[in-house]
Image 1 (tube, rainbow, N blue to C red):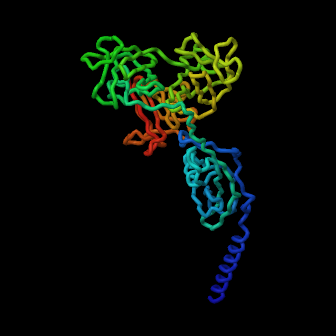
Image 2 (image 1 turned 60 degrees about the vertical axis):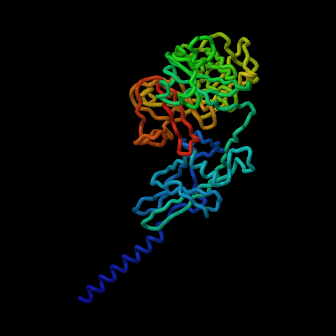
Image 3 (image 1 turned 90 degrees about the vertical axis):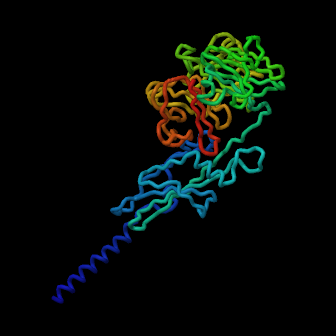
Length: 449
């Protein structure tokens, strides 16, 4: 019996020795510095609040082999200092990639003391750092990758000196927002002339009036149809569907309503108008310019008023100034762009930029029936679109017609966008906006007319 016990002890000892010997030999992961990310990195990462939900970078790597029966996990770590004494865990996975949003990069930029305010002495460019920890928890084996530096750039908000302000006056009526029941009034802006305000607005057939601060106090219309606003009874102003420029001189309460719009036309957008309306410009009061967010294809474009061939403009000299010369088409390549036009001097620019849009069963069969309804960044972080026709269904918002970082509104719906539920809509014509600057999160408005 003693011999049997001694034999069992020897067997256990041998097994234990072999197990320890194997543990010493299983570590085959690459040493720090040899284990690195496999994706390509940009020289500089341009960050804006408007794209905070987008993916800023997707880190990828090769699997590490610890030769143990348990799975290998990965932890993407970030640091502002570079020595990782301020380590933050970006995310953990058992896969081979981890996405980092623009919003997370903006948060790290803020921690690094960067900002986009030209009136501060804080820099608007700087570096942040990332590394990967690969580990097998059951065996307490781990290795770290080499450190990857990302250079972040926050474009400063530029004041061109040409901006104006939002006026207290607005457009209200069945011709715009169901007399205020469907959303805020159409906006008026101040101009260079004291007391003169202007609104660039898309109307539907109906009636309108003008009022201040979205309130029914002192509202005015035109009972006599004499071009002078009054507070008489029955003073609604009848309008037909279209795009208009409305000007009010509050010094004498005279006003004008005139058709007004500019749009992008061409083989690079809508087959020179044969495949739909032009991509419409919207007014940016902060720079006193007109802008449009648009997806283009390879081809040529021009800019024209009111979807007509009267007064169309191009750039024959390729000098950044719009002209009416012959052979003045502007060549473009496929991509998403923000086009800006200044009617004061006919200057323009075409800059690659994210374009947010509306997608869903309520618009384009979730992208299967055409491009999303594009919104334009009319001010930094503020997206806007009007004359958008929806059908009964659901929608979400996404950038550049892709599913990276799409946004919805989780129940109960509160008007704040997040990576969540679809937004139900009913058929109708809409004005749609998103404000990424709202402190509670990206806030959206759907105004049904």
